[in-house]
Every structure is written in C-alpha cells, then in structure tokens.
Image (cartoon, rainbow, N blue to C red):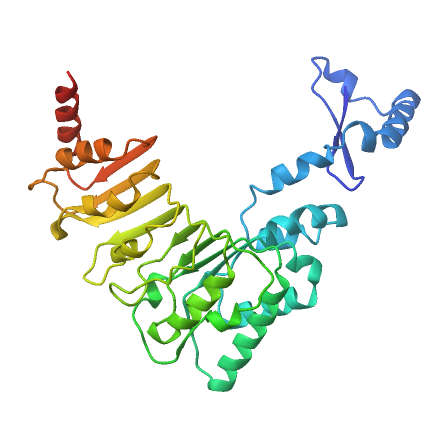
Length: 340
C-alpha cells in the first residue's frame, strides 16, 4: 500500500506499507503504480499538508535559541511562524555583551521584528573589559532598540548567581534613562533597580508607566523603608515581596495602601516576627495570597495560628497557599482537627 508523508514546502516522501504477501512488494513498479505516483505528486501538497494554523502551536514547543533561529532559515513559511515566537519573548539572560549588541542592532534596524517583542528578560549586570566608551556604546544601542519595541508588555531584570558578587569591570545592563520616553505600555515589571543613585530616575520612569499591574522587586530595591511616590503604580494589582534578609522590601507595603492589590505573594523569614501586619492595609482587596515561610515555624504564634488569622482577616480570600521548610503535615492535621 502506498503512503505519502508531506514534510512542508511541497516536499513529500512516499513509502510502501507492510503487506503480508512479500512477493507483492518485491515486484518492480507497474504502469498502474507509476500513474498512482503521478497522481499523488499532483495532490499530495493539498491532501496531506499540515494545516498552517497548527504550525505555530507546534513551533512554540521548540526551545528558544539556535533551534528557533535555524527554523527561520528553512522556508519563508516557517520563518513567518517562528519569528513571533523567537522575538515575542526575548530572553537575553545568558547573552554576553556582543550578543545583546547584535540583538539590539537587529531590533533597531527591523521595525517589524521590534513590534513582535512583548516580553524582555535581561541580565542585571554584564562583565565589561573595555573602557567607558564601550559602556556608552552599549547603552545607546540597547536604548535605540527599546524605543522600537512599542508592544513591549513586560521587563524582567534577573541577577544571575554567578554575577551576584560585585567585581571590577561590570556595568548595569539597563538604566532608567534608557527607558524614558519609550512608546510601550508595560503591564509587568520584575527585577532589581540598579542602585540608589538611579532611584529617582526609576520613579520618573514608573510615572510614565501607569498601566503596570504586576511588580516584583527582586531581590529587593535599595533604600530600606523608603517612601514610594503616591503617583506611581496606580493600577498595581499584584506584588511579590521578600523578607529574608536584613535589608528587605516589605516596608514598601506601608506606602502601597491606596493601590488595588488583589494578589500578594510573600516570602517571609519566620525569625523576623509575625507577618500579619503586612496584610492589614489590604483586607478589603486581597483575593489571592501565597505565603512561603522560611525557617522554623515552631514558635509563638505558630504557623497554624497565623493561617487561621489570615483566613479570618481576609473575607474576600479565594486562593491561599502556604509552604514551609518544616513538616507542614502537622499543621494541616491540627487544622483538620480544629474544624471537626
């Protein structure tokens, strides 16, 4: 039995299926076989071709990087389907100076690719062996590319473990002045904000971005207990905060009361006290609460006491998750016993 397998771009492979009578498949092609081949050649591209609307659903499972880049070179059809995935979420976390410069030049010189960028992941710092001229060239090139990304919705600045220790010859990858005046409207922002010296400029940038709804200052923003301007993040609905070091960012909540925060994720070092005061400003708005307790929970108040207090204090709570390094099953059994 003759089968046809189409591999895209009009390329079809024909093969003979298994038949119990091997003598029938060992015979040379007959005239009827040849005519059948000709008929399949004329119709295979129409009858066995994968629907175009399914291409992107399959391509999205290909890891970003060289594989997607190479797929863009296969044909125009695959290029049109792969490029929005390749550039839609541009992950430059493991890129070095030269590769980010190359990405910036590509985005700056190809507006149609710039319009595809919706999310950008970028390293917090980069090693720099050259002089100040290289730093200025880098920031100018990246800033030019960002001006083109008018559809950008999220920025994620990630500090890699290998770059967490400051050394000489490093530079901040992204500065707030590079973002000011850009035409995009962010919905989410995650990452560490350079240093204290640039904090005022970051506030200026956030004043321009009035549609940000998700904010994750990771691992913290500089300035313990700082006052956040009241005119930034007016639509903030979700925030992730961490109290795991002496200089934490949980005091930010002191200044976020007027924001309509519905989702709060808290990473809390239990040795630093009771986290219940954190939620008192949002008892009327929080619907989703994720709490990761770090360290021992066997102290007063206990984890069970805190869980019950949270449930009582948040009448609109629809989702609650508690995770601990300790044996949570003990607390859960106590909770079940209380409800009996």
